[in-house]
Image 1 (tube, rainbow, N blue to C red):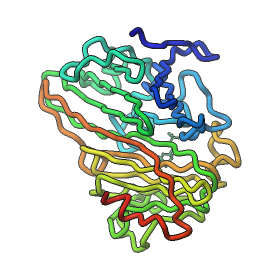
Image 2 (image 1 turned 90 degrees about the vertical axis):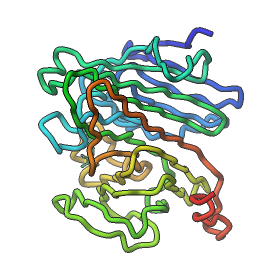
Image 3 (image 1 turned 90 degrees about the horizontal axis):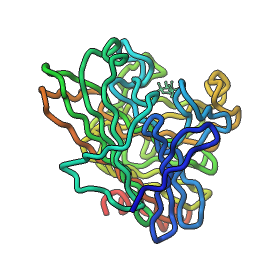
Length: 304
Ligand code: TA6
């Protein structure tokens, strides 16, 4: 079945994924970026800035940007690396994954270009499978070293979650963990709270995190469950009002209805020998949660 490829208002090719349960997703070849994930009630689950610039050369502020081969400014490349600012292509050879010959999956690839090799002299193939099923969005990134020498890289799936009111959101699963605080020159701290709540800017890299993290949206009675393999760290970021105002592609009030919880490999960059391939996996799903009535035991969500 041919993929459903259309072009957005800026002429960017995008792939629409659908599944029989009625949910959908949209993936742009620009950045290999998921820009929409809607449930079977057509509710948008991912945040997109009201001032997002949906065309090159900047990264699109929303959905799930791919941060590779660098995270933040921890290196000589542009912030979060260049993969999210490049035009990817459909991948006709996703082996060893079985071919994704249906409307609910797409395989994308980004290969190092001469331009990239000037900035980052390592030859690579970055692949991404995006798969949609009822209530679940799965991303399977892979990086192959096609160079003659070993190299290392950082990686993050920057998940912009849409929330009803950031001041009513809790993140469960990161308690007692160490984190680098980007607001304190990346100083290392230990999380003391029994859940992360928000009343100001938060910009932290949590280390050696569990495979499951819950993002509880109290007002919407909805919990996002993030399950990950091969991505040991988790970034939690909300710019709050002052930082949001400093970002030209961020609406002034947008910080109230978004939260980034990213699956990442930052503290210990991934090292690949020549022709070795690294693979990771992230599954996003939603469960209805009436946490306020105490009915949702987050431990059950996390440990279930
Ligand atoms: O969360 C890390 C971080 O670097 C923040 O400090 C903030 O800059 C955010 O990412 C946004 O980065 P971007 O390049 O997407 O504007």
